[in-house]
Image (tube, rainbow, N blue to C red; front, side, top):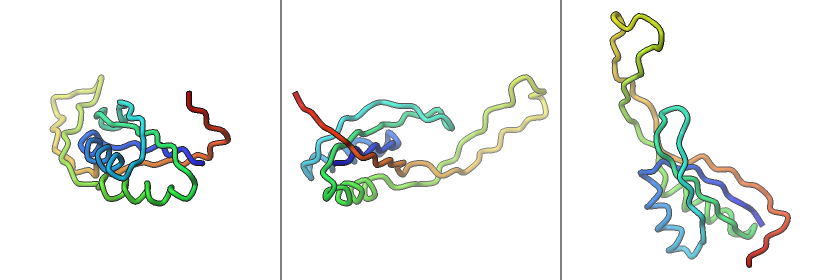
Length: 109
């Protein structure tokens, strides 16, 4: 058995949740916040049998695509902000960060 931990952008979370339900995979969805953009994320905890791991990964891959987004950088703290002109920067957001952990024992009460 494996525990799949998938951190996805909030924009992708509903689509992923619906796809997992449709494929009859159960998941726990937790609200989380990313460190870089301070933007909302969702972390999915999905317990699956070893032979179903690839199917779940494919669902995540199909529903959590990365995309480009313009962001305005934050002005430097404590420095002279008079000469600082924040030009928007294009960065890649979305997609999914996935961890797969072996589960030694599973109980459900």
